[in-house]
Image 1 (cartoon, rainbow, N blue to C red):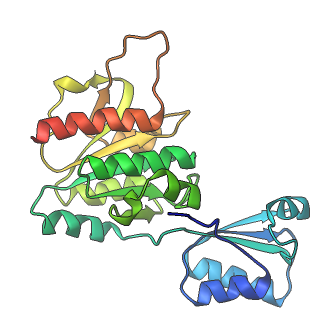
Image 2: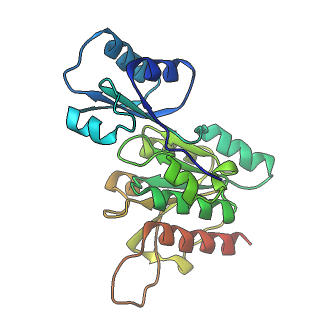
Length: 245
């Protein structure tokens, strides 16, 4: 299946995209541009909780595929986002205890796509990603997921730490990947669980880590001390699968 890069250029086209209900991840606006259409675009972006980035003309020219951006380019999601409630509902419909991936700032689209693919294969009910400082559901993510996005819902939230708190009220326990954690084989990873995977470089942020109930370390025998985020997600996910039986 081919996935088109969904970049929308031009003032009228961007306004129409918002008003038609298309999911826009980010809108890039020429810094300092204050005319009527740009005011409308900013208003629509705020209404739809879309990230606004102010950039210079050189950046827009580099991004443009048509050469006719008119000072604005919107990046549309290749897939629509689910709600967290949809993920919980999916678990309930399957009569299974919830198993959710929570990704804290994954910025590489290939990592995100690979993690979504792993989540699907491991039987997770969905994936949660943050709105800011993380990649969204781009065409590259869709391609790398190898079709998993058709089956695994992805929700985008404003605050990962707050979302974890809310999911705890639904009975979930949370384990995050951390090199200084307890060996994963020594943890009880059964039941309703959220697996938290951090940023490729910095790992799980301090605030999110504090919200987790457990930290899991993957035993490593090699000469380097870390794994790729998508590989770490796969290793921990399948330990959860093993324990869930």
